[in-house]
Image (cartoon, rainbow, N blue to C red; front, side, top):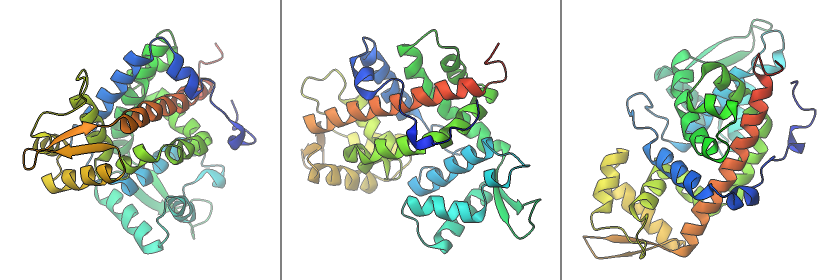
Length: 297
């Protein structure tokens, strides 16, 4: 499959509403929560990627690297493209972007080199370490989808972290960046958590903690447990939860032995955001399959 003439015209094959209505959505949603809560468990291997801006720069780099064609200069992730892409994420200063790139290089995820066709240009490349770490996310994204569609061969490869499928998936992800942006813009409650350091894991660990509890309230000591699990400080977790309370997502009570009640607004927001993520990943997975060497066989 060649690149779509207008990537913005791509829309999900399985809409968010269809995901929500799927008879196995509840099981898939639970798997998504569990996979997200367990992500980044190898803290040393994912050093620095828990920062939202650093993580975004990392994923864009991996996507561009997967789609890279040395004979086509337009596919190279040049300095100009890095600055443009990060500007869309709110990082508008060149120095700040340079610092993000520098940290990725220091941590062994990226290299910078002169472009072969024009030595004046510098391109950013993903290392094998970066690709290996990024493949861990395939299981997070595709285990829930394999529950919805267990017979899909691409989704099975995603769960297995297949390197060839990973390359195809990250290539196709460049065509659906607008959908990823829509998923965040359309779900500000989830976006609040995601933009915090380890925020997505904290959010999903909270949802795990109240699963099956009619009151949707955690046991006392949640701050300490989630701080240890996510390798963040107790004050960091408290700050995030206070912000969530200000947004009407949770209710805090209990003084020093705080408990957190997940309010209906947050429960609904997480469910809808999960469905939106599955919808986009479903399309990406289908597109990736068309890029596989044996797809036409």
